[in-house]
Length: 161
Image (cartoon, rainbow, N blue to C red):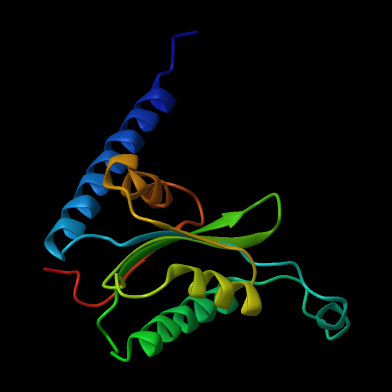
């Protein structure tokens, strides 16, 4: 039987795609004055009361609304709307059966990130928001969602050019 290297070729193409996207996100961050934060946002499991009402797990729509609420909270704390720049990837955690986010966020240098960690915990679950370090390659990590099943990557307004 002849050797089939199509899986190897697909893996190489996926790596090249992630590399290109990661470089592009780093460049976008440079153009907007830098990314300020790297965020990982997860969702807690449902409470017994939520399960009793028929709600089982946070889904795609709910998590999208949670992201929008976070952006509104950030902009409310800034007192300026539509000024936060972000790119976020959403991935489905198959082992838990729920989505979670990774994000690069800019325009928030004057905010206290731990206030947003606390806000997310109060409303949704666990947040890890760290100062962005360009050398750690967060943009490349975020771009793994471009090549994954059920992955989703979205951008704030103002990042197109």
